[in-house]
Image 1 (tube, rainbow, N blue to C red):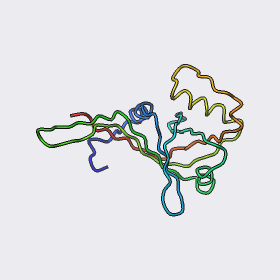
Image 2 (image 1 turned 135 degrees about the horizontal axis):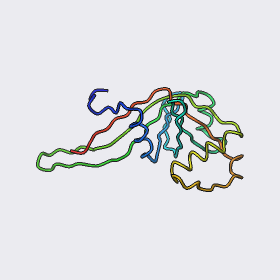
Image 3 (image 1 turned 90 degrees about the vertical axis):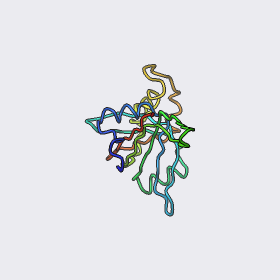
Length: 157
């Protein structure tokens, strides 16, 4: 990282940034160019490792790419604050972000319910939000098992 003073080094601080984000951008390997898409996500920490959960239709381009190559990168960011210093002719952005990479594993039917609950928990913290269980069989649910990640923060001036 070029500006080391912006790096978030503490694991728990990185996790807090992730909890504040509402979209995770997932980059998959396509033949010619990376394929990136914004997704809702859920998260859990198991033995100091982060798992990110996603869902989609059972079929489609994204599912085909995952089945072909399960390596993926991710990015999420939050706390954006545009700062404009008119007298200096200077503009910058305060933010927090996390980037990382890992491998995706498609979940079997028995694992889906728990993963979907983690997705719901991310957006409805502590509410045990209802979702229709009939949708589970029509939904592809997968986990990105994070192998490496870094956090970055640019504080407001």
